[in-house]
Length: 469
Image (cartoon, rainbow, N blue to C red; front, side):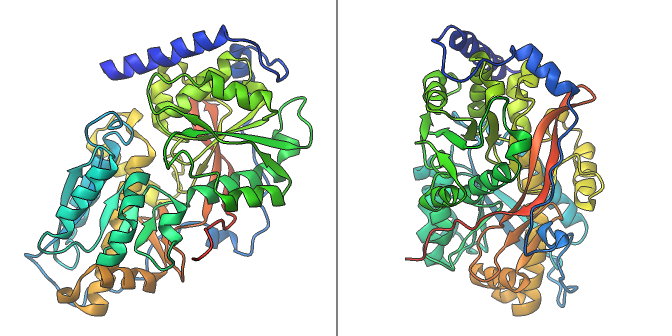
């Protein structure tokens, strides 16, 4: 365990101790954390009935592959650059960890070893931005002015998604983005920002729909029929990404109350006691976490210390439902048992899925530690296989000499729903720029180990894209 991790775990534990000395809050008393964990350990994994949907069960799941024809021409000796912008240094560098680098490298090596893209070799160009918007913009400007011009870029933070939104439209360079800001995808329509997962407001609305449909089964002891949701999010665009007007309007339409957003400092030592007490005092019986990495760990530790864990349903955005949260909690990872989250892709435990089998084989061949089995590896690994197929389709449709950001997007739209290695899907059908299906998983103990267990198979999320200008 490195020094940073030890300090962070210590900070979470100290925060929990400090919170335990705080003034009592309004919710009914809960069992001590140890008893709550033991109860969760004994409880069987939950299952929920599949909600009604206009889509078939098969159509809700990521497609296993793409209908791409064999290469019509070959281009040995050519190179196609894979441009990535991410935080490799700085205070947030550990958020993605080594998984996204390893996943990218492993997929690229496998693709090149099997003939590349119609003979052309993929070459990674990874730029450090520290997730700072000004550095994201500077990195992009250098990439867009390079020769040859990029066919696409990959970015990983909401800051990059927002600051590059208009630039990529002007330059016609698709940004395959993991920062899921709804306005950046849909204002204006038919833009060049494409999501690796559903926009945050869709995720939030989808969780509220599921909670409403299953409230009688999941509600805390003593809770009434009314759902009151408290959202705690990082003090940035990502943290405010769930509580958009469209998501709030959807919540109101199904009779769910959402309290004003409580912001959380982006710091490994942030104290969230006051924010959570405000939400609890105002009647929250659902807590939604709109942060990742050390953010959810702080919320989990504090709710446990306040004795409030069993008086609320805890859920989180896709990045909150990730292995790194358990890594940060370390020996106290069982504190997270009972937390729900949106997961818009297959997971490591879905070993009956061919795409997962392939990712597992690559991961094991790399000799990486089990603690690196996070979303970042699956995201990057799958993305590169989707990119390979789109590039091959573009070459077949328009010719290698006409490869560009514009032809890349046209080929992507021709495929419509693009399989990313069978792990998740890009959705560019019509005006879509992000998928709208996901699973819900719960952290439960399986063979004594906290594990992400499916409680709701892929279902369709409400559409909360902002209105067209």
